[in-house]
Amino acid sequence: MLPVKYIGLTSEWETEPPMPLLDFVHLRQMEAQYVEFGLHSYAHQSYNTLTTAEVARDLSGCFTILSENNIPFVPVLAYPYGAYPRKQPEKQAFFSTLERNGILAGLRIGNRCNHPGTTNRFELKRIDIKGTDSDWTFKTKLKKGRVRMF
Image 1 (cartoon, rainbow, N blue to C red):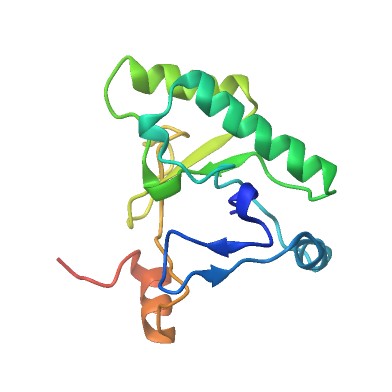
Image 2 (image 1 turned 30 degrees about the vertical axis):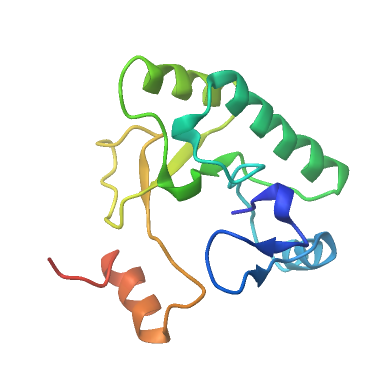
């Protein structure tokens, strides 16, 4: 998942000190090795605080920059911080904005398995993997969705 505005810069939201992020050259090299990229917004802002017009502009920024730099992507969006509007009617307006902008699915943080047919395609759970996770933690999260058992 790509936070597009920060490609080639550093992660300012995760670690201390900020970690460097891949640049366009390295992304193209990875894509050539059968890696698919999804979206993680343009400006890495929490989507539960943005208007639908701001969300549409954020997505447009993703599409423009990735197209200009010849980076293919899958129109799937992992919400920054796992955040999106939770109350109706804002939630439905948000999902409609995603759909109008060609987003096929939205990924929140859930750290659980999704069950086919029981989840809205814009509320799919994803596993929160961090670059600082140990090998054991990474493997456990892949198998169980999370490390804590309760």
